[in-house]
Amino acid sequence: MAMRLVGRDRRKVRIRKKVTGTSERPRLTVFRTARHIYAQVIDDVKGCTLAHASTLSVDVRDANAQEEKKLKKTEKATQVGALIAKICLSKDIKQVVFDRNGFKYHGRVSALAAAARKAGLKF
Image 1: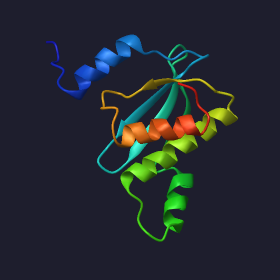
Image 2 (image 1 turned 120 degrees about the vertical axis):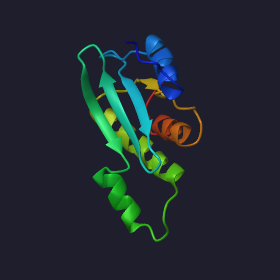
Image 3 (image 1 turned 45 degrees about the vertical axis):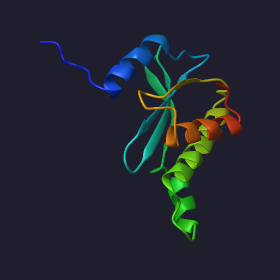
């Protein structure tokens, strides 16, 4: 019996038909929940994750713990974008393909992408 795709899953399949990551240009994919945001850089040819960062990463968590006021989710997403770009550049990954994973390119997703671009990733 075929599974029926609804909403974000349908958009995700439509995006993934066109977006694939190679070793020259891996795929930067974003996943967000109500509380956290995650980013991975994936080589689809080899089927492996090259880099990852999230709001649960030690660097982001420590930076948020040192802040006097609580950061908003969009500000945390900006930190995750800068961190994933820093990790990628240290692993000599300069260009990526952005995969919004069925989410609207708006709010936290666009903040993460803008921070990654500003930190030096090309996409």
